[in-house]
Length: 421
Image 1 (cartoon, rainbow, N blue to C red):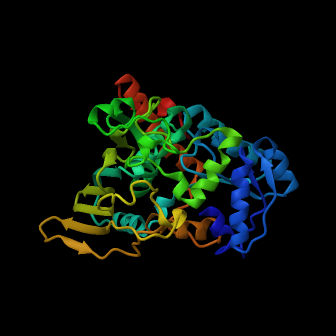
Image 2: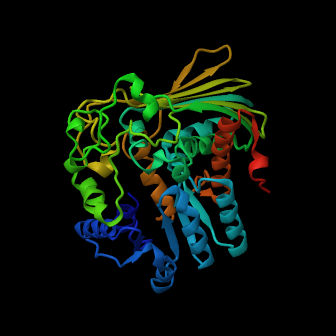
Image 3: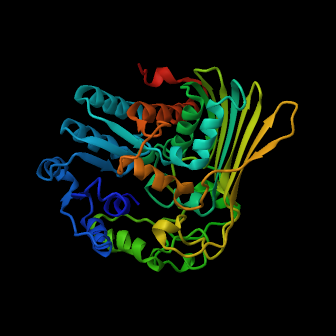
């Protein structure tokens, strides 16, 4: 998505100059796709030559899309080389790495932008404007429920995300999206967090539910042939190029059995957080739901605002062995349907269904294209959607505090993890 945006829609503002990666086969695949887009192939560098690449290619901005636990290595090196950085969320996976990034920003004066694309979703922008305009008055509480279906949710248990040391778990890797939205909507910071969670459905723990098949990875495994939880890499040309054809170089397997041993992340999590404004949030993330979407309910001194988004109302059998996201993984039509509803419920008045603005089921609700217009195309950003390193830290800290609480059973003060000025 980033590469396509750079070399097509925003080629007049930005130039893609090089790739760096731990796997040359994946870089070669991206260069083949660049040529298909009418763009010449770009130089490729091994990850160990990252700093040399910055100098040789005269890089201005680095886009970091590595495994989450390695973000800080490239962010800090780029900042000290005089570059600005755009990084995928989460900014990193623990407090020491976060402090390292914040210190490098302060030392170099360079800029880190965290690609929280959900800030750019038209629905989320609309919600922010309504709250800022006082639609519910002073905000007392937020309830936020996020459901990952058994196609999308399962995918975090097939790949490197299943290891909490690499991803921070779903409280960091996935929920940082949602915690950032709440920070942005409330214009407030998390103060204290309590959480409970467990691995309920996937991994060895989930075998008792009766869905597990006996194989380690899906490719060439007869037991995976009709498994709705198996990812069929060979059936998807781009996934084959990125993973099957690249395995010989680094051994990384993208299609692990979601019920295989070794999962160290949770799949069912609940959070209670208190904010600097005095508001509270209850949050729940379920990674094994039959449908995908979310509900946000904001309670205030003048009423209640409710947003419900159905991204897919079920998982069709035909789509179960593929990945969510037609824009990246092909343009096949999905059987599932969805939609969005935004309702304002003022005191002593009938509820009002507010027409939703610009909602689409493509590209994170239309957010991806809007984000790249700001990050790569120089578009105006009056809602301050471009998240700073400090914003990235605040979103991360809610998840880290939740993880700490799940370990200790005790509420966690965010400032005790990492004080921020």
